[in-house]
Amino acid sequence: MTNNVPLAPNMARFRASDGTSLAYRVDDFTDPWRTPAIPVLLLHPAMSSYRRWFGWLPVVAREYTCITPELRGHGASEIPGEDRPLTLERLLADALELLDHLGVEKAHVVGNSAGGYIGQRMAIEAPARVASLSLFAASPGLAGTQATGWVARFQRDGIERFIRETIADRFPADQDPGFLEWFPKDMGRNDPAFIGRFVNHMSSRNWAGDLPRIQCPTLLVAPGAEPIGHHGLYEGMRDAIPNAKLITYDGMPHNVGDAVPERCARDVLAFLADLEGKGTQA
Image 1 (cartoon, rainbow, N blue to C red):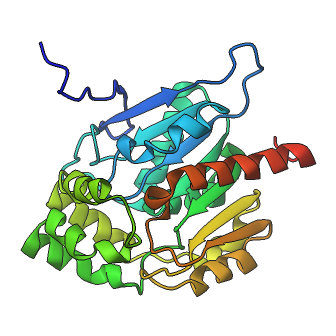
Image 2 (image 1 turned 180 degrees about the horizontal axis):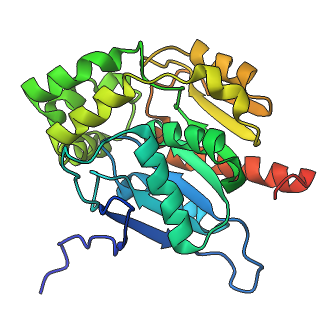
């Protein structure tokens, strides 16, 4: 026997309405004698998995039950074939079907980067299921950003090399070197063809005109040095969403959810505590 082989998370599974097998976890370290609060649904970025929440879950799951799906084609979830459409609407359906599977009426939705695209559409299309929305580096779509050129680079160089070559767009220079070595390798585990489909679709979408339909309390956390698009996108979101609060992480590149996960988690908890204090939590 050896102790140096990492154990994989024990994922549960459910089958989406189109037959795709999707993985998820539920983590809960709240006081067992407390009345359960509305759970938190954590939606990860593209090229990601449950492991990307490693710095968040010890903080958030101490206060709230956390539901953490792995998006179709990511992590332990099935990679659907091209006969199954890959659209934002399908990803939204996956999230809603998971809540149905777990018997959850509504959740506090936290979306990181592309996970925030799903969160926004959930608040727009299924507002009764969203108690609040917290978005980290998640603009209203990728249309018109540098992402339009990513797929050609995936195909030419592979995902791991692409991430290594764009690491400065994602993390500050003083990031832990061990993390900077692990991160591209973890991203490189993804299937390039599927990620190409994912990015191509997101690069075709922009729903800025729908943002006023988001009626739930919304926290926007923006990288101050956003290289994918620009910081002004988040200011526009704050102005368009009726009940939105914007926090800027000055000088930070895109991947705030990975670079400073504990800070992000604490900002979510402070936001939710403020809602409870105002009596606005449903």
